[in-house]
Amino acid sequence: RKQGKARAPTPKPKELVTMATAAATNNDNMVKLPPVQFIEDVDAYMKGKEPDAALGEIQEKYQTFKLLESRLLQSRNRMLGKVPHIEKAIDMVDLLLAKETASDQITVDFELSDHVYTKATIKKGTNCVYLWLGANVMGEYSLS
Image 1: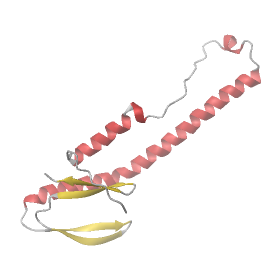
Image 2 (image 1 turned 135 degrees about the horizontal axis):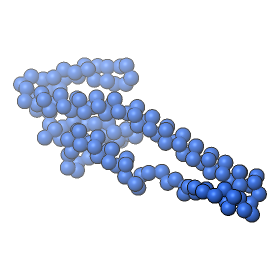
Image 3 (image 1 turned 90 degrees about the horizontal axis):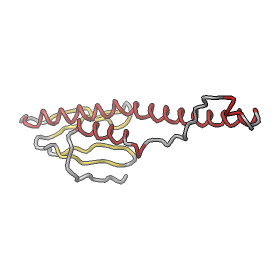
Image 4 (image 1 turned 180 degrees about the vertical axis):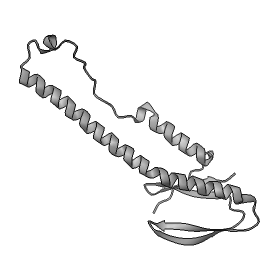
């Protein structure tokens, strides 16, 4: 697996979640919705149109919005599914920061895959942490 190293200024773990949230709300990343036409006067809207054609056009727009809604809900559910893993990673970084001044090494249960754990020993003097970002990307962050 390829692993990339992020050597830019190292944000604190809590800042990572804030940065990800800000990126997700950026207008450049938003789904482009087709323009919506509000029909105030149905009689004026229907002048010169066949009822079946107008109804078909409205139903087509409705189906487009339902498809976009479905995609957004799937994306939202995927993102919400990642929250526990992100929180667990942040808690682990907080533990490493709290134990940084301790004279002993730390023994933790390390998750290899779903429901498979092993013991890991973290020695005193560890100054960086590797966070799995997904899509075969891992970032290295300094604890200082």
